[in-house]
Image 1 (cartoon, rainbow, N blue to C red):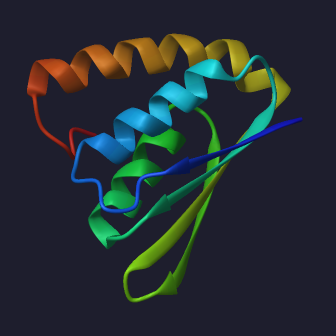
Image 2 (image 1 turned 45 degrees about the vertical axis):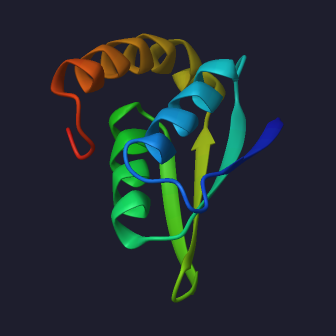
Length: 101
């Protein structure tokens, strides 16, 4: 299982979601992505995006300005997820804002 880390600390929306989607797109099958963000809004948006793509996601508040989201993609969801990521990226750019889910 591939493991990746996305460091989006200090990044404003929609950058944490974009970085996470790119990481999900690089997975070739099952894998885990750890996403680090510094605000609750980014954490919630990354969680929503991950779940809408068919992955499972859990979050943890580490401190007042540090959150961790663990995204897990199972082998059976990997092919389906690629199509959802492409569609989601198109919708995000069309809407031009964070929180489009």
